[in-house]
Length: 121
Image (cartoon, rainbow, N blue to C red; front, side, top):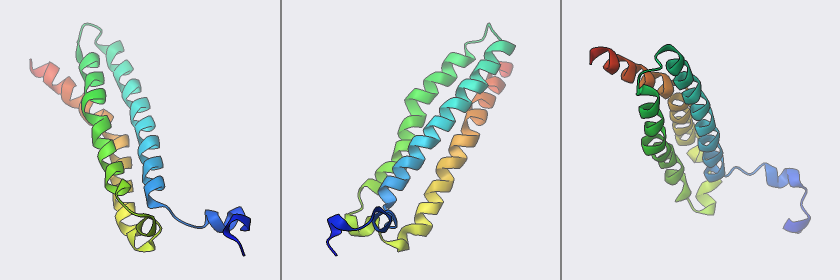
């Protein structure tokens, strides 16, 4: 059967680790950004005179996005054969877990760290 005539379900069964990691990074950044804004807004309401919210948002732009992009770059280097190789599943799952752990926990860690620093100063 000609590849162009194959049903989309046959094409859908093929894994592309590059695309899947790119999707995870994009969604992880959305979750991280949403949480960061939520935590920052909460901090702004509790301590309006502090510069803490601005510093936290600068960290978002200056450090976190490149950190997340690091995971994506690791997978971009795969060729088409490697990108569909099921042997990469365990490595993908490890990186996926790291992306989501960072997305879920880092906003609280960063804001808490700055909050602690503000209390000490």
